[in-house]
Length: 105
Image 1: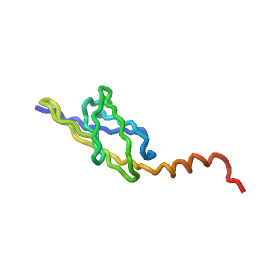
Image 2: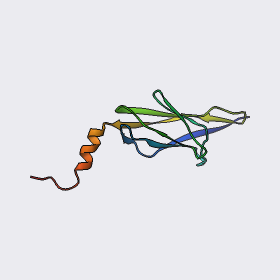
Image 3: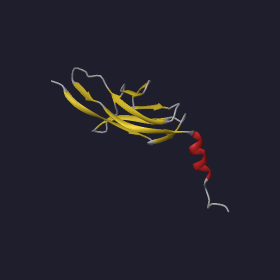
Image 4: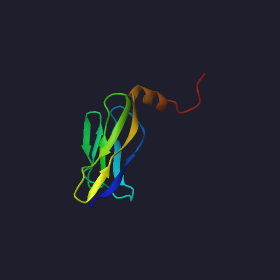
């Protein structure tokens, strides 16, 4: 008999500048890290480490769907999960960071 465990996908932020990596964590609902989970976004694929973590960077702007999966074992079947991340052009983030004080006249 297999136990079913739903995966949970946590990301460090939902909006990231192009080229800057985000940290992804895959865990189960009991907050246990999932080692060896496959995290995919387009053609990018990363495996999680012993802490259930990996990093992914996007090279072009847009909305990216992150999908976390894990192959079933004799005892456990994993239910995949997904979330969206928005990669924004660096020029957009550079303009935002420059606006520190009140507007000048």
